[in-house]
Amino acid sequence: MKLQANNLWFTSDTHYSHNNICRGVSNWLTNPDANIEMTRDFLSVEEMDNSLVNNINNTVEENDWLIHLGDWSFGGFEKIQEFRDRINCKNIVLILGNHDHHIQKDKEKIRKIFTHVTHYEELKITRNNQPSYQFVICHYPIISWNGMHNGVKMLHGHQHLKGDDRFSQNDRMDIGICGHPEFRPYHVEEIMENLTERHKDVNKILGSFE
Image (cartoon, rainbow, N blue to C red; front, side, top):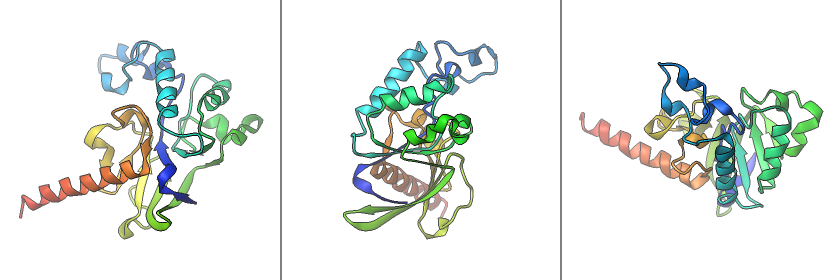
């Protein structure tokens, strides 16, 4: 798939209408071993959903492209359409996650509400009409991917990682919405800046052992 860098955004794991991921109503936190960071700091599911939808709509323009790396929504089949209708962006590519079973089965032809639906994709991104970036994308992290030794980056979701934990092997990044400090999608240039800074930090650490 070939796309332009100027209007390209990535996110994952929105988990719309998922009670347990919302701190104010989560049952996960009744477990004494639970990590509060597993949840999002909202008082209600409605507050969480409204915040995520607004953050996307305030970031991604109507004619941009949004690549969503899976786990779209919870709360039943009808929620899939509901949240797609609330997102203004016309072009949404969905990479199927482990909670997207209704979409995977294409219940009632639900896939038609997305521009493209698949499990895995290899992207070539042009910048100023020149080939610039290449990505392998999947809901799940892959430890060895096509082109990884030739500058191809790997983007994934699923793990809900934050901070430095979002990065591994220098060229792989969890782009889930939980990991973004502003709970919004990442622009492709933002992803490249993050990965570039990560390389600098790793090289500094390695240099200190020389």
